[in-house]
Amino acid sequence: MTDTKKLCDLCGLIVETPTYTWKTKEGIKVFCCEGCKGIYQLLNEDDILPEPDQN
Image (cartoon, rainbow, N blue to C red; front, top):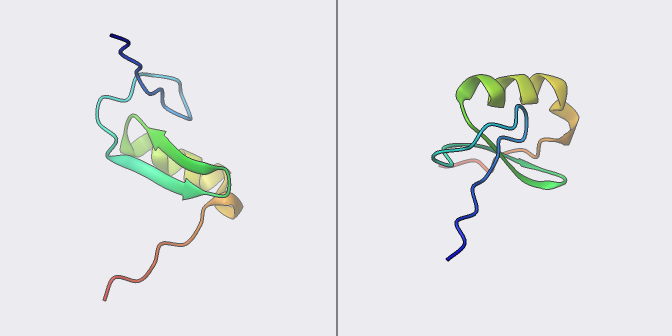
């Protein structure tokens, strides 16, 4: 049985739950915490795809 762990796309720490994500031009990015997600957003704002409106 292989247990592959996802690593944070910013800092490289293990992602315990895939709660913090961004959909980007390169695919889905996952982060270990809200801080890493926010920093990634600041650094890569042009790569993040818009979220569809939820009406």
